[in-house]
Structures are given as structure tokens and as C-alpha cells.
Length: 117
Ligand code: SF4
Image (tube, rainbow, N blue to C red):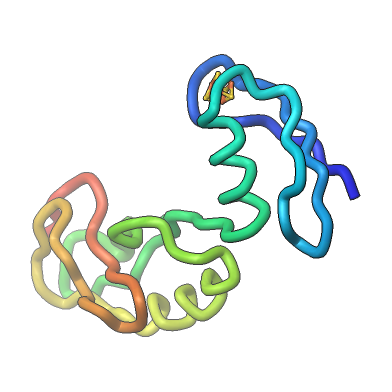
């Protein structure tokens, strides 16, 4: 099977054509540097995403606080991560990039961008 997608490792945005057999990358074409092949293998064999969302706030000046995982997590874990993050309710002021929940699975969740009071 062949898959086509864009390499996002740099602004060139090379159009990659990837030959995949049994979910293993066998060939990458269209990349202008080795990073494209690494990216294609990661994206096909072990895709990762940083999850960005919001959590509820109570007794603060805002109702929702933007958060994200502290790093990329496996794409298949996104749904489970969302279910766990939905359970978080912030009731005290938080600082930018403060870790809100540690190791509540294989990832952490922290506030994003601003402090909230
Ligand atoms: S393959 Fe290399 S040159 Fe092309 S977009 Fe990816 S990183 Fe940039």
C-alpha cells in the first residue's frame, strides 16, 4: 500500500510517498533529506501527538483553562487521555506551564500559555 503525506519537519513541506507493508515502512520517496524518512517511519509505525484541549475551572475568573500534554503521546492513547483530562477541575489559580496532573497515565497534563486566577 502507498500513502502520500506532507513532511512537517521543516518549512519545505516535501510531499512524501511511502510504501507500507504490514504497517512497516518499506520505502520513502520525495524526501529531500534524511529527516523525511525518519518522520515517515514515526508517522506510520508509531504516530505521536501533543494533545491540546481545555479543562474546567471553578471559583476562578475563567470557566475553562487551556492545557496540553507535556509532550507527544501515542496517537491511539488520545481518546483515553481526553477522558482522563475531562475529569480535571481546577479550583485554585495556576501558573503558565504548571503541571496539573503528573503521571495520570503515561503522560502529564499542564496549563498552557497564561496564568489563571
Ligand atoms: S524531507 Fe527534509 S527537507 Fe523535506 S520537509 Fe522533511 S525535513 Fe524538510
